[in-house]
Amino acid sequence: MPLPLLLHMIKKKEVLAGMETISAKELERLAADGGAVIIDLRSPNEYARGHVRGAINVPRGNFSAGFPVRKDRPLVLYCERGALSMAVARELERRGYRTKSVVGGYRAISGGQIW
Image (cartoon, rainbow, N blue to C red; front, side):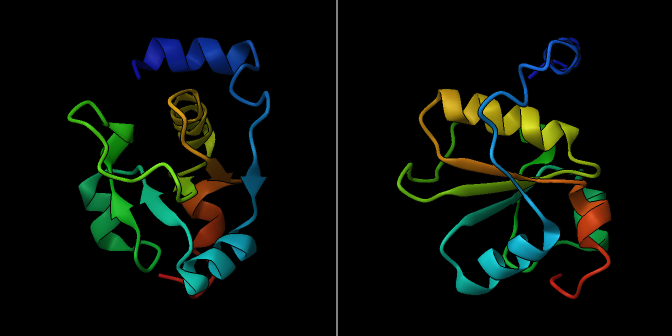
């Protein structure tokens, strides 16, 4: 998703409409039970410095080469602060995926022991 479009969506609050958000604590539960696909949208360098156990790194939500995850599993997305993950989650919902976005992103997550 191009950055200008993302910023436009955030200003118009289209990103939040119907968006399911979760806390870092809820992500910890989802990571432990393995029922969801956890996607880290940060850069490979950020991912290498620390990430949620089991997370798949898809930098900036670059799904242009196709997306190999089945639509019957929920997707939990996080980025550094939370805005990008909300926008990407919304776009994936439009494609038929069930999504959740972590409020506060990795900054909220990194205080826990889930990476």
